[in-house]
Image 1 (spheres, rainbow, N blue to C red):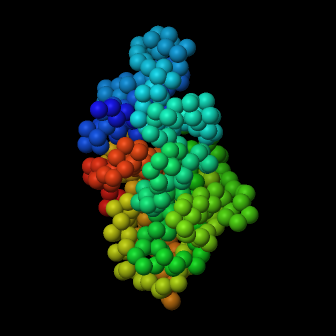
Image 2: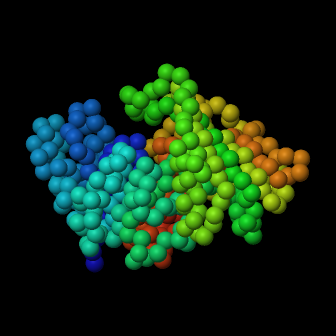
Image 3: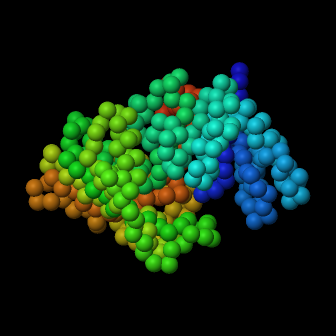
Length: 357
């Protein structure tokens, strides 16, 4: 039987923990081997690469980088092309725009022997948009060979809509969804890109505002839904977490007890009494696998408010930007390999998710 090999391209904020989780749980997930690609031999990244190698992952790089890696005592086993050619599924975790370039340069070349290719949130147009638990039913075997896992904030936004508004028999329940993404400046692992003061974003999309609402609307269109959404964004001088403010206008009145019960019933949502992003972030570093919170959203229960007529729901939630898309990448990869049983396979990751933060 052919071996099931998942190849991850990139070792950054998303790639590194993804390689780690796949390696740690590969037997339970039904994966035979995990490989990963790194372009540049850096002594500052040597400890990270060695940690991933100790977990059982195998390194690939460009043919002309082998010497550089050997000089810093790292031993790549495959060239770029070799690793992609032998992979069952490729998950691209490269910076914005690189995934599209890789698709043209590499992935289309090997599409006949690789079951599927997955890219991250910045690569709009790479393939069908996907978020675990939201639009799994839209995936079509044999047709969707390229999948675009949506961004961290879009995961949060979609999860809120799905759980609070559209769950059960409430498919036409949403009148309007308004969102403000209060974005962290950069990740704690990044030494550049920090903004010295709050910086407002522009509304580049005439209908949806920012890409967050646009991408959420596009994702829901894969289910035949046409949602009235609008989003804005502001970047603040903090490295901890994105915060999402939401205001949902619905047809069917609700109350706080019903709302909390809906949120608790979704194991991709964590609730918290915390109101400080630093405390939520710290909890993830202390208790999360690879220091990550894998839940799609962490909702601050003290911030929740329902209007007197029960049709307007407002609140704040935290976006685990370095962890909440990982499940979707793993789920999509397993869907390519086990289309009829991937949902059972990923249940082994359930202990990594929190009910409360």
